[in-house]
Length: 400
Image 1 (cartoon, rainbow, N blue to C red):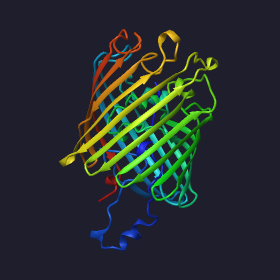
Image 2: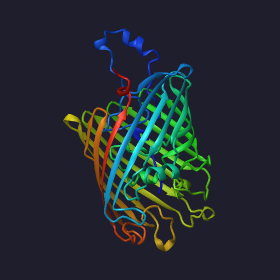
Image 3: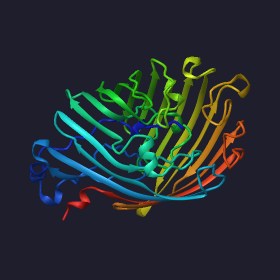
Image 4: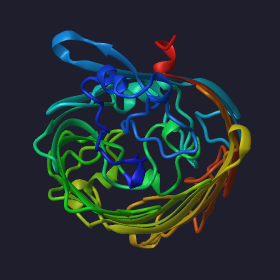
């Protein structure tokens, strides 16, 4: 299983926190003081609304901003695979986010427990997810604001690839999709963010790709944003090849990948179509006797209603090249297979408290028996229902 996280949701440009918020508020009457706003990291694209952080004076460490989230989830599904179950319940997030988001030197630390549910993949509890993937501190980086238009980041960073982010609360849907499952999620390395004009920004990174600890990857993105519209072109690739594999480092670690993402955000609507291509080249030295590629597209839509209700939905389709007869590498449900998924996520949020539920259907086409759903791996469809309840912490823990 491959994992992922940019799109408009993944930008690593933190919103600045005023150096002296008390002084700033004192310049206007108290009843007209601007309301606190959420920081841009972690990125949350909606429909969930992140809270402004709690602010603490940490002396020589500067003014610290803190958020947190606790969520629990329950899952029921058809045609589960061996090792999975028809029903599951788990703590899906128990995380804290600490950051310094002003001044020339900034930092971000995310720590705690998490799950990474995705359609068409077995459910994994938080303890196993943390130990098999990114550890108890999945994202942590330092940032240097080198100038008004330039930033340098170093550490464990969200990827620049894709439209969906890594953790459940960041996305429109609880489960990530089939395209996301081809991408990487967290990589360790160095990143440069550069503003190129009023509407154009770029990012470039040297990193370890799919968390491989082999620093041979180059990633980049170019974003045009004006008004309610944004367009992102992202690409990444491994300049070397390696046979190293873990749950966080699949065979896709030897790939190249490109994506084009359009986002429209206005009023009650978020509309986000995107296209993604990837290729794993032939290289018998790393265990890829015959390479293969993927082509996929997805449409994510969210409509907000009154009284905290919203309805996000996602539909996607992905196809892979190759065939079982030519020994192509398996990137989905066997060489030459394709996948379709449809997901809807009714959501209600009241302040810091939220409830939502995924209803998803995943379908495998042209699959190789033994690679899909059910106890024998021969069922082409899987239906899931997931309920999630959560509480977001921020300035609500310090306000009086």
